[in-house]
Image (cartoon, one colour):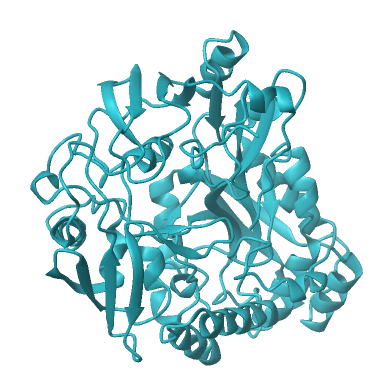
Length: 518
């Protein structure tokens, strides 16, 4: 789901030595944080760290490869009508659930409809992790046992990315711990303590090299790291800065994985102070590398746009236009009429009422529980703005209060993060009519609206990419907000277990089922 978490490609796996590769065991013990998961519900995960486990048990029609392209999984092929209204997916005929029951189109349809029904239920507040499916599917049906037909709500290439929802048997869509078709099945589960996975002997691909995987649950990042230090676990994955202390060496391998959390500096475009010149000046002042190094210990990836750098969606041709330039910031501010006329180190100008007004901005952020990195990031930004005479009135608040401020447009600057959906479509944060559901910057531009609407008519990757490039050009020109960085996490392990180049938050364990000793 493209949702706001108010605080709240290509990632190269570090090379491993041959001793690590040769010693890959048949059994591995992973550590992770988990305090809320009490039931196995693949459609309704309540913790992000549980998703990598689900993705080893439950498969989807489509999967996303290392180049962030859709590839067939349960669907071996698909086609769409020329207008994108109708998509037809052809299932593999050699796929069975872990009890030996064959997969059919009815299972796919039942799984999708369970998600859609919950997403559209106005009587509940939690619509499920995959609720964005309602924006892509108008209806879904089984043409026969191996053919699924989808009528698209949004008729475009992005629909393929929405087909990554888990599939379970038709009879088990509402059940706890339903069967899956993936490389592993859940042997035992003890909430808050441990979970065991064992190889699915009926998996349609080659049998997993790592036969058994157990997971020890921890309540804090510190206890997780301590378990690794005392060799109680073979590997751990965490988003905590505590995991940044480990470097690849003789006894440990560290892999970075990218989260879906995009950190942004939101700027209220309806504020009289935040004209395009001022917004661009602020962009020229922020030192993202300094924040990433000093605040996040390197566990973030700088980005200029709401796409991951290095992927086919990202407009790298514009990267050389983004840099820190204090002199250019000063020029833009002067162009907008701001000067320090009373020499108090704060810029000012005469407003429409003939009053002298200082350039003093309300800057809000949400306090992240048990972590002060966001406060430190805000302080770094405030220092950069003060360098040219922009004053900030900083206030930390609860997530609920922050969300209310953004929805009402009662702020000037806000440090916020977005949990970006698997589908590369930034329209929710850019289109004029989305001011309460993502476009918190209150950005309005007819050309951007046209581009976002055009994006949602492109049924080929080439057409889709061309519109994405144009959207990023418009973001650069108008500067509605500042994309800062993607948050990163770390896997620390004694055994390299994957050859995947793009290690992603919800698929941290991807590749363990097919790891081949070199």
